[in-house]
Amino acid sequence: LYHELLRYARDHGDLHSESHVRLGMEVNAHLIVGDPDAAQRDVEGAIAQWTGEGFTLQHFYAERALVQIDLYRGRWDDAVHRAAALWTRFNRSTIRSVAICRALALEVLGRSLVAAPGAEDGRLRRATKIARRLSGEGPLWTRAHAMMIQAQAALASGDLEVAAVRFRQAGARYEDADMAIHAAAARWRLDQLMDPARGNRELESVGDLGAA
Image (cartoon, rainbow, N blue to C red; front, side):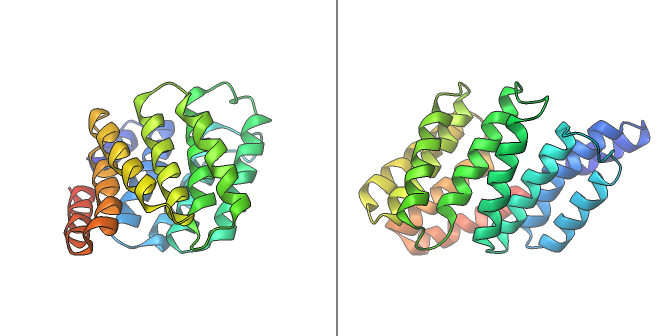
């Protein structure tokens, strides 16, 4: 699908839509198939088409995509620092009133804080606080994202029961929001806890959805 959207945007000289696709769906597609280098090239190529002045929606999505790439590569501290800087820049920018960007900035910061194996207590507490705020942002998908952050924080704290409940709840919320890849990822995390063999099969389904 993103190939068609990208082709349409380029055929019509729609630079805004082209950059949106490249910084979102195309980056995610590269990461799903295990190619963070291609994802980074897309980010760099997309943002090079925009002015370096100010902090626009394109800059926001580019920085968020770079956090995603840091997380994929296991650069936990880089991801946290970049996500924290993104949150600061967003709040000082002219786009700070854009609700979806606020939710996405909170989500990627919370996810970065809980991503590292053995995340320290300070990061877990901050992530839990962010999850509470994120759950109040409104849309159904923000509550699902908040539950994923809570689940990972609980898992890092050793509370497997709470983690399982939150992963299950997040999966259901993602299904309700028609976010199939996210729902599959939540089920995979749950199955990693409950049934590792089934979790491996669920991981394959995530890849299949991303490649579709």
